[in-house]
Length: 407
Ligand code: SF4
Ligand code: SF4
Image 1 (tube, rainbow, N blue to C red):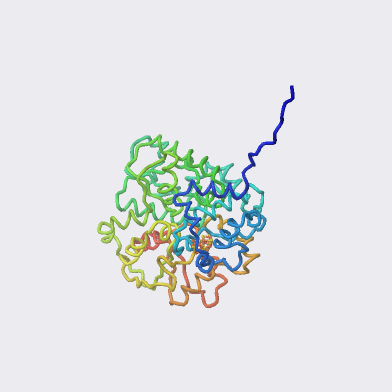
Image 2: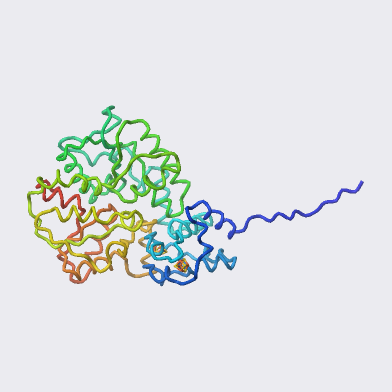
């Protein structure tokens, strides 16, 4: 008997198929097929002129069945996940959470990853934070707070608010000042809050946007298990990236709680807060809208309402503000790609932003994201005519007006 052996007609999936099928998992991801090739996305991208494949060209490569050309170029690492392209796309394609993040996932699979980003991802996996700090030190910033912060694992009691402090406010010496200022404001408002301390892991949203979906899920699930151990009414975050993750990404993993950024939480209590704002802060202040508070989540008014509640403040707007705000350069892994991006651009987006603040004669550049304070302070150091410009988080400015500013 003759056995006929026929060749299988099933082809292994191509890289293009993999990108398309990954996009099916993103809300409205299938809209990529409606791209008009208008180039608006590439034009608005802060680093589009330095990318071999800005979003529109990337879609053209996908349509041509040539996505491997995108993966062989490293210029997708210039993307800082700022949502500017997503905001302006007339076909409403979710470029930032869809195409750009999928491209980064493929870059990781291909091993085409700048070393500095690899370190941050490895630290996140090993220590639960991208800075490589010990989990045991996560609550060290609370030392000396009066009243002391409630650490849920020790207090073993329900609280009204679980404050998800975040990586940089927990560990970065400059940003710890923001955390301490916010702790004092919450205490003055009699907010019954608790923190996770060493049980808190990175929210991992920036790692997700840098293409590390598996790491994101691992850390999110650890946070989810920690949340489930305690009783609380809602979560507040210091970091817009954590707010974005908990609001928009964690629910798909079955981790769903009411969550707000701290500026939303305080703005809701503005009438209670105002009588405590006794010290004048006589300054022209301009506010930098963080991408993951503004463009990604539509929160524009609350930070401004808080700044305007401080006596003595004159609020002025930079050329790019609200929906058109410029990124600080830290999103989507940009926080861990400074060296790589400097080599390509020889300038930093944070420097452009500081120049905009100087142009409107601002004394203070106010921020509401932990990435921004150190990034903008660095940029001020090299800015022409910028010596007078001070960078402060809104929590620090409110604390200053309460007469409890940190040293
Ligand atoms: S803006 Fe939207 S429609 Fe225009 S090229 Fe970019 S992705 Fe395509
Ligand atoms: S998300 Fe921002 S940096 Fe990334 S491609 Fe879009 S506009 Fe450019």
